[in-house]
Image (cartoon, rainbow, N blue to C red; front, side, top):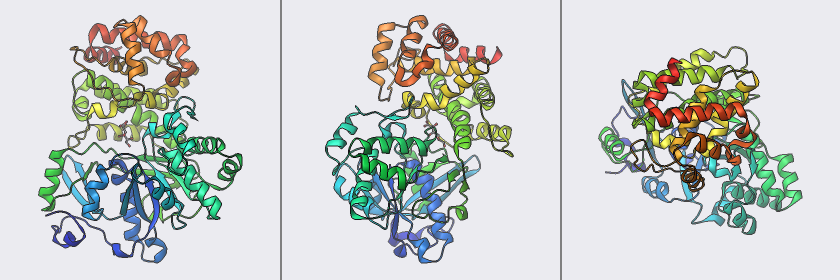
Length: 493
Ligand code: CS2
């Protein structure tokens, strides 16, 4: 038996299911990037909003999800009426919930014109995004659109059938403008610094390459609230699918796995209305940037450090890595070092936040692979690690812990592990980085400066003598001692 509308009543009573009449829900949101994270985070919140409300203004906030490239999610979910399971895993056990907020799905590569039309529909008032860091076709270091990005070049010449997320947004907004339809809110839910502002800059820069008037109209009328999104969502495995089938008594082709914790902080600037997000636990604030920086520099930075160094040390998951007391202390130390670079609104308890992160990382029920988090480091390092290093240098504080994390990334992108086995490095710059590594050889004094010279990642900071020295020393230790010992040496320093 397969999960689906007709089978909802056959689910065991312990399984939560949509507490509203799905046939009354209409789409108000188009979401670009229909991955596991969206389905375990924003879609669950919308599901709660739909359950909390009883009038028609609430029922008009269903979601149409778009995958930019792969048909896999659509192929899995369409035959089950876009219903899917969220499995919330803790040491004490797993709670299952079937989410109904997703109404339909589109594969952008297959039907780009139809997706633009859908986004231009006046009923759509929010376009949200989780397309990962690299999906914005920008240079993370500067936050500007990469005008030479192949998808940007393509989209500028084919705006009626775009490929990239910025291309779809500009195409749909252009169409709305021509048709006299008010714009939607663009809601970025990716881990970028100042994510709303950054996407606003990318989108207006893109639009300006087509038409100055369009770009000005977007700047004047579209809102791009900043958001901080947080929930750990490892990739779903076949073993996860089997476990969910056992709990449900029926198959779900693509359930999502997550942790109990969830947080969404959003700036309350919506051009065309929004569901009652507060009723579903969303924190609506006037300025998200401090929260976003807190999350990037405390959670994501130490996540990346554990991912690179943990992978090199032979640990498969973050929970395994955290079992090693030296690595757990390294994560705690990174958080402590980054915390002094943050200026938080009054009442924020950073030490409680740090303690909760360490507990979440250690969750033994989550199988979050170090390899998964290690992906796309070139797009992640600036906002996770480099900003905090720059701020610490400005205060004349040591940067050795963060330098070890950056060195871990460098050692990782050589694509050869400590036993000489190939690492499957997934990164838009993988080939460029591997070529630099080959040329430099396994010599810290050569490899560190070569990689610090990649300005797309490091910008001017790559030339900072104190940073060069700290990263080169850390990389030297990684080569001399291996990751496990280097971490131990670092935290005993
Ligand atoms: C992780 C994030 O894969 C990664 O880079 O650091 O996806 C992390 O799990 C989320 O940001 C948690 O909210």
